[in-house]
Length: 244
Ligand code: NAP
Image (cartoon, rainbow, N blue to C red):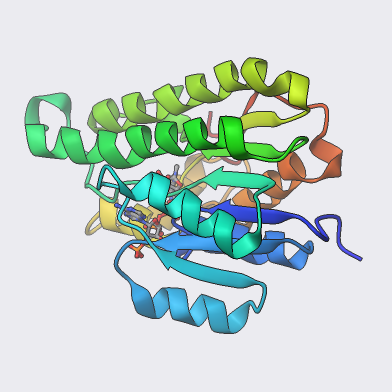
């Protein structure tokens, strides 16, 4: 018996990195999961093969219509949703505000903010009572680097969406929270830091002495969406090994 037996979940950007670990963990806890991917169909197929309770749906969340279409597809496949994890994030390499183009600004905001807003707007009316929403933010919202300007702003917005929706949805027993990872060992982290061994730079300045792993974040999400998280809502849990 798993604590999420009979529950259904949508995890965006679930094919790689942190999202993949969340899909694996929720399925292990008993949930049936739809996860989205944007481009890497091979990674999505590999996860489907690995996790029988998980099904992939392609959705480029930079496209305006993609979020509602994804929610529709997940709801149809799973016959209703209990859990929404907004994990997909833009892979745009962070640059200071002075070097951020309009196109990069639009891409980051479209994926990190607008798509999360749209999926949450669907969830507010369509998620089942006692459901769960978790938005994956970043510790950059409390400890921004010079290159994190637009990225941090895009994530700060989804923390506020969560805090506000927690109040909107409390009467239905739905909890809404954010999880803010610190540096976590994924393709995104390494792609954002070309030529740098992030384990060597971030590990030593992290109080817990190493880079985060995707399952470090997935375990926090599992807490929030499972029965032990029932009294947590409107919160932002920083999961960064003490970095912020
Ligand atoms: P990742 O390894 O690059 O994986 C990103 C996932 O999101 C993939 O499944 C990818 O699908 C999907 N994705 C990318 N662009 C998308 C788009 N336009 N539309 C829909 N899906 C898209 O990233 P990660 O490091 O696991 O990051 C997951 C989340 O954690 C992000 O929101 C990120 O901002 C946040 N975060 C990460 C770190 C870190 O250090 N890794 C720290 C703080 C916060 P495809 O493979 O098909 O492109």
